[in-house]
Length: 186
Image (cartoon, rainbow, N blue to C red; front, side, top):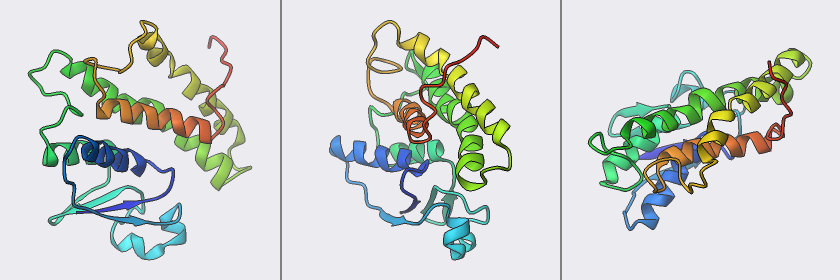
């Protein structure tokens, strides 16, 4: 199994899941390849591996996965059973799936616009970058409301890859300096 990774990129979710599995006593056999970000610009030969040029990429026995949460789930299923996932017969399964995908689809999505137009193409869409930074702040409301009860983990009173998914989005917000956006009520 080979994981293609960039520092601070979404592939951190996959690497974090692997490290958590190791802490749980699982043996995870993988090769880590770290590339400069974005690899489609700074490591053009990567496009032969992943035509879109995005990170992460997991290669395993002829299969290629490119979505960070799918890779985390794949790794947990392959090396499980593990408490890092919630099974379909558990009470919190629906909530787990929602948070797992919320981290990427709801929280990380607006950050990609901010990243592109503030770091990769500054001056091209400054208004969009500002608007999406605010949107990221607004999208944290569900998370803030869920955590008001003092819970330590998002679901099932245990640490799961849903926590990794959401935590990465919050981490990315701090690296982009959009974690403390003041929001209007719009």
